[in-house]
Image (cartoon, rainbow, N blue to C red; front, side):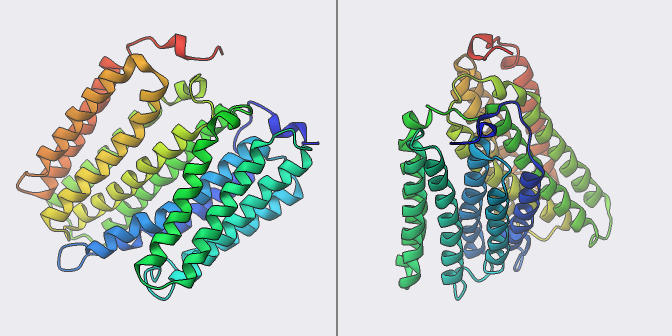
Length: 378
């Protein structure tokens, strides 16, 4: 039978989960490497498109490990060994990121698939130990394994077909798991723990923003615009932290977030947006990016952040929906308008003003509206 610790509530992130996060952030640093380098003032299309195509598989591994641990982590030796094996393979996978579109694709596809098969086995093992009491875990195991095998098959092909097959396996896995929502609700997630893990993920990504900013300061010949960009960039990061975490505890009690998938998929957009913004701030300080590319980074990064940030609240708290949509449109509009200012530093300042407006509007039009009826009792 499954250990009762599997279903314990009110727990926090374990030391193993935090160690897993450290490995994840190291891999993310490699994944975002492409966005840190410019060529004649711009970033090539191939660099831009490679970022999400490599980030999504790594993110999906982290998410699967987190959701599995949320329900079934008993801190056994087996769980520790499997987690360490996944971490080791992730480190090896990161060495293939920069050549993933060329010679490294086969290695990346096979390493990703190997990790997914380990995760599929973990769910299958839970099904075996529970004596069939939780039939949904067998479905999850089948979903992960099928997606892994489809992705692994991409190593047999050349050209665009291999990329379509690799990411097709990921899409199949995501859709299959999402279609099992009703079955999965029979064992709800430990919501406070899952919300905490999502918050730690956001902190990790914000830490990448600070690291990118600090790294850029080492190569700057200081003038008033460099100081302006550095201060504005830090204020922007601070405003993002403020607005993300200010209402965050409410998600721990949101009655509508039963499976956790809304949080999971929304944070894909949020994390990608934050990583794009981190590199945008870095380039603003270095002054090595042309205006069109900077504008693309600004609008894409903040739009993804706003989208990822707001989806869970829009879903969980219907009274906030109208204000969420209008507030987001106002702030995205400010960002778009700022991208047309004559200097990049001015554009960055305009984005920071937009984020502060977002903070103010959230306090004024959202957090002031009572949603107690949508919250579970303390």
